[in-house]
Amino acid sequence: MKVYCYPKCTTCKKALAWLDAQGIAYDLYDIKEQNPSADDLKSWHQMSGLPLKKFFNTSGMKYKELALKDKLPEMNEEEQYALLGTDGMLVKRPLVIGDDFVLTGFRQKEWEEKL
Image 1 (cartoon, rainbow, N blue to C red):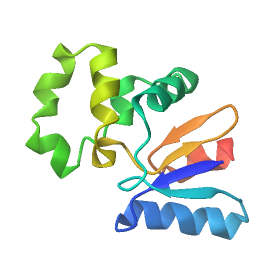
Image 2: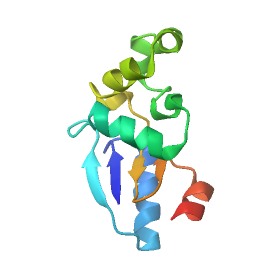
Image 3: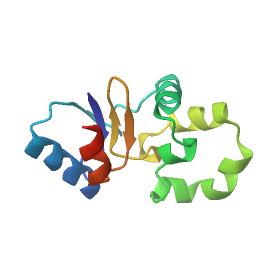
C-alpha cells in the first residue's frame, strides 16, 4: 500500500499514527518531493470511483492562489490530471493507494472499513 503525505500536515500525521497503531504496513511518499504523475492520478481516480474534485486539496493555499474553485469547472479531466501532476500541494492528502482501492483524506471510519 502506498501512502502519499506531506510531513508538516497534521491530518497526515494523525493518519500515519492511526496506521501504525493498527499495525498496517505501508510505503510512505512525501507528496511534495514525489508528486504522483498525471497518469498515476488518472488511473487512481478511475479505480476510486470518486469525483475528480476529491483528489484536489481544496483547502490548500496553492488551490486558493490559483483560484481553482472557479477554474476547475471549466477544465476537462485531462487538464485537471495534468494540473494535479504538476504540484503535490494541489493533491488531497493523505492519498492512499491499495491494490483495489483509493482513499483521499483521513476519515477514520472510512479507513476502518477499507483497511
